[in-house]
Length: 360
Image (cartoon, rainbow, N blue to C red; front, side):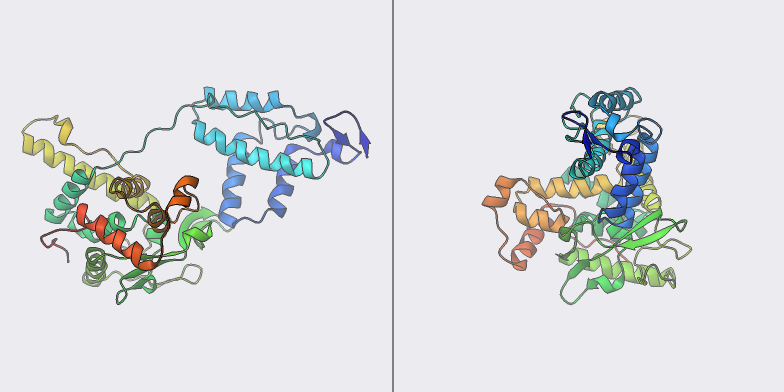
């Protein structure tokens, strides 16, 4: 192999290697899930393949990468999206460094906080608004069928894929525990668009969440509701069956459908507030539109506001990382500590009522 300068090493093979080909090699040897692999491929094809993907690796310069990020910024992409693209590019080019194709990773220093628009702040419901929403759903003749699911979401902080992937085998009513060991995604992994069951991306995602009495009752109500509505999943998704949350056609609830439920409930709540006030605008009382992800963020935020032990919070939410200082100064001694934190949270939020909620 012949050294051309301080930055590049090349021979007859490597001097023809394109960034696209290097990415293919990266995906071939990288130990990642099929879902993540599909996500990476989609992002690459959308943002890199038709811009700098055909460039030879040895000819790539930092200015090319900066131009890509600047173009994405002008096209309205967020700093978070550009940062994700940067992370993939950096990892791919690091492979070229390790293989002695280039001496340094030209993506280093290319990313800046100035690229892209700031990510929109997630809508979070306050404790009071969370309680008001649950009370409204409880009294509604139309939306009370969603009350058990909403209580479960607010009482566990599950991710969307974790929630729709729940099966009755994951619930231990005697111990009042919920086992998170898989999630559902709706993607094309080379076999057409369909549901796939995958394990959590990190070990932290595999967890057992203690359930409060109210959340346990919500699961009991959901089981009764399914029986009344004759909802039962008779198929199988990658070995999993008997899913809890189903559509009218006894199909697994789609992520988009879950968000549609939240949209409709919020719209109905706000419409009722306007009628109650006798005017078209009563901004102070209205709730912001939220997605399943925003609702999870609400749970996370409200738990933190109640000074929940950071390690308990990290465990419940299934997050792999937390602030290093918090990691050092906080420690969860046992599963009992986590249960006590959950019970404390339930007492100060809408997931625990002094009067009985009108559940099935």
